[in-house]
Image 1 (tube, protein in one colour):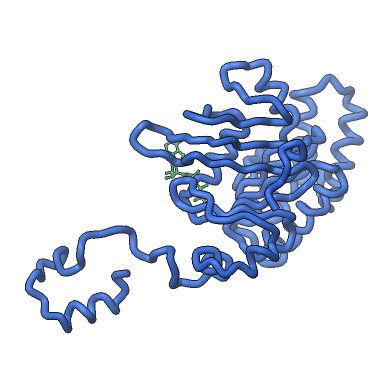
Image 2 (cartoon, rainbow, N blue to C red):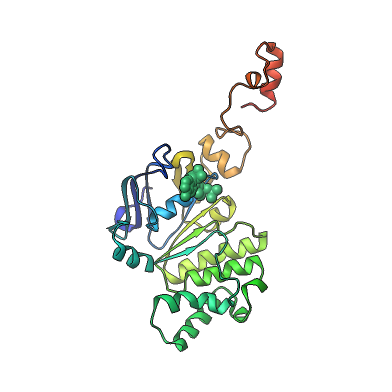
Length: 287
Ligand SMILES: Nc1ncnc2c1ncn2[C@@H]1O[C@H](COP(=O)(O)OP(=O)(O)OP(=O)(O)O)[C@@H](O)[C@H]1O
């Protein structure tokens, strides 16, 4: 069911965007991210998922259309508005982007010290509370260089929620994690969303994890094209060949293995190939 606009914290309204004029990355894209929900944006590498997060964060301006945050159209030229909106937003980057020389504690304290005038005593309590929420209160004195990749991801999550954001954006939160750490991270995203009442936006390639924790799933393809959206159940049960191929990770389907290329015979200088040879070459994968 297409969500109502009043329930949306973020609205992407007919947005087109390209880093340069020669190629559109997002093409007339319209989406809504609902308050209090976990929405996953899935799609192949390069389809524009991170770009979409950048537009929501006001890093880039849309060439056409509007990005609306809680009823306010984001205007990247309005520094005061951007500062205000970014205060309401927590971002978990692909590889954590932590300060490796600082302790776990100081990493989480960083945004509180930078963005607020809270006394150290209060910062101490908030940091330990956030670390407790991700199960790492005991790791507070460790340096980032001393913790595992999965733990570092959880520290980054504690830091992302330090200022109690209304919107938490996760860029590839499961990348590079082993299966157990992946399950822990996925469960944490869901739990933190529900406990804090935040709205979460997860971009990822990991279909099973996203299906397990999301209320709504958006599937994008190259050129920022929206393939489908719906509940995880709706997408898992979809009969659309493109959706099926993606959610089931099938190698064959409408999404081609080969990047567009000239005819194989032409590339190998075999323009006079027999019909049989052509058939063999095609069976070899030139789909
Ligand atoms: N700063 C930039 N300048 C120019 N082109 C860029 C820039 N950032 C991304 N792109 C291009 O925009 C396209 C979309 O990139 P984007 O990172 O949004 O995709 P993605 O879906 O997040 O990919 P992935 O899943 O691999 O992270 C890609 O073709 C990429 O090369």
